Amino acid sequence: MGHHHHHHHGPHHYNPATGNIRFAFFLNLGFALLELIGGFFVNSMAIMSDALHDFGDAFALGLTYFLQRKSGQEGNENYTYGYKRYSVAGALLTSLILLAGAGFVITEAAQRLLQPTMPEPLGMLLFAVLGILVNGEAFFRLKGGGNLNQRAVSLHMLEDLLGWLAVLVASIVLLFFELPWLDPLLSLAISVYMLLHAVKSAWAALKVFLQANPLSNRLEEVKGKLLALDTVRDVHQLRVWSLDGEHHVLSAHVVVSEAQKPAAVAALKSGIRNALKPFAITDVTLELELEAERCAHRV
Ligand SMILES: [Zn+2]
Ligand SMILES: [Zn+2]
Picture 1 (cartoon, rainbow, N blue to C red):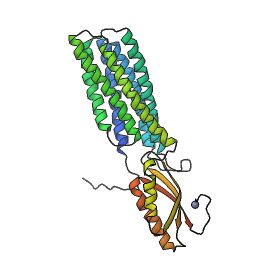
Picture 2 (picture 1 turned 90 degrees about the vertical axis):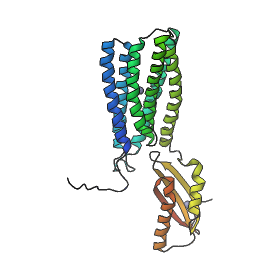
Picture 3 (picture 1 turned 90 degrees about the horizontal axis):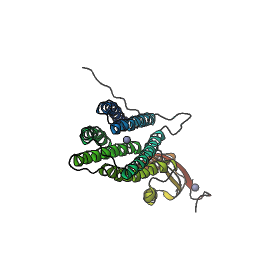
């Protein structure tokens, strides 16, 4: 028994996304090993080739885990804004891997649709149940909330979960009917669905790198909040971009009515920061101007 002392240093706390991604990594690695050994004994090429997929997944998850962990690091001389975008890089990477994977399965499934072969349903069924348990657990751990990176990883786990659900349905039907085209047709449908989601998720990460305004349809609302403050006469050069999709950066020129006492300036700045908090704006840089002052950016 002892006392635990928790030290909090500013806003940098432990991100649950890191632990969730690590969990998915070990789950995938373990399952890949099981598939490799199981596939060898059942003599199933399909299961052994899926082991390859899951080793690839484990590699991608390991890399994503590293990037997510790195993203918690504080800024330094080389990265003055900190490492938050390492997490976005992970999201982009995962989305691209997902895109490539979906493209690969689509071509494979199309080939098998043209030349259908009857698989071994009982072995399929066994691995489908295991696959659903493993990927289902990983998906439900990761889904909902989290950052762009965690959402991309959870999308990937969903892909694998849907894939195994399709194998389950197909293997049950194949126990009773000889429909060799069923399995590739289901794979094709799922892969097209995943392809669309992967494009969406890659675009979301890319938009962060392209410095899109994360509050695009709320910019007027932000401006209104600033103008509503006492002594603020005008706001221009209002710019918002996002470090990682969760922490936004704002800079603006704020025109005040007349020369302010130092205490009033400090109060104004903290008033502005408070007004911006609900917008997930964590980084504010302001330039205060007087009404009489000339500014090239003022209209
Ligand atoms: Zn996968
Ligand atoms: Zn200005």
